[in-house]
Length: 355
Image 1 (cartoon, rainbow, N blue to C red):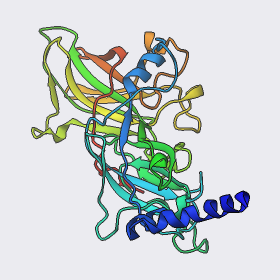
Image 2: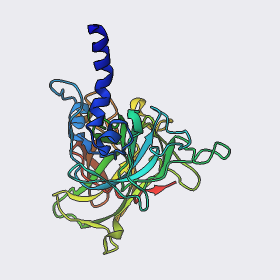
Image 3: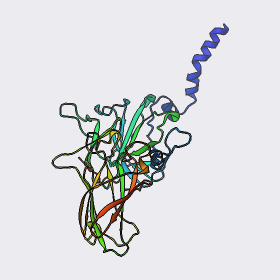
Image 4: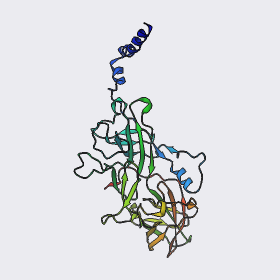
């Protein structure tokens, strides 16, 4: 008899519990209530990455530090019900691409006009997410693959002036202890900041008009699932990225008068990774410059590295930033130094052209 009563109480408890709940509580417990996705984002600490690549060892090892973004930017948030698969047709309301604005406080707000904020799947199923910036629609699959089917990539035409970021896959669900962790965005390009000075204090004034990195490939294709970026060229978009200093209002460029270095622009470029290949497909193991000045154009100026290459890796890696100092004489130009520096904040505002 006791056993019979115990079983009866066990099976009745859930019903008794629900009977005392409100309709809203019952809906939430049953997975019927929509739970919106709320996201936060961090930026990978590139200064620590620079230190490690320069030969320093970070105590403790482990994950690379991250911090709140230095500037606000718009990013594409790509959701999928299947881990690692961002190619299937969008068949669920929770899947697809949303535009998110990442604030300097790390919070993400939703910016799709006429589109509701994303929600978690009902019943607690996992939702997966990758993100990239600047915002652009992912590439569509070839015709015949189904309406709304993505190719699993997104394409850009690099300008040399806009950053390219990627946040690796995270996962979350509707339950409070399963919500998404923070996205961590990493730089996918390498940064060169140029400065110039005169060889002689009393030499003639020189205007630097433009600087071109000759081997830089301007087309970028980013794999959504992994963040791997492939760089290439076409007849329409040949290799070479340029910072044009004649657009500063005077039309003459930036004047260099003395031996104190002055800034002459910066470029964000495809990294030169393991083996020195230029953009994942052969080419030079370094970059060469073409510098146009008021005293002439200096071509095939090679970048050389000192202590910044102590790790044995190519210094021009993704997320690395270098200051390049040009030394200009009355009739010649050379590079005095190439040194590791902290990443300089740049634009991530959607001005990067989508291919």
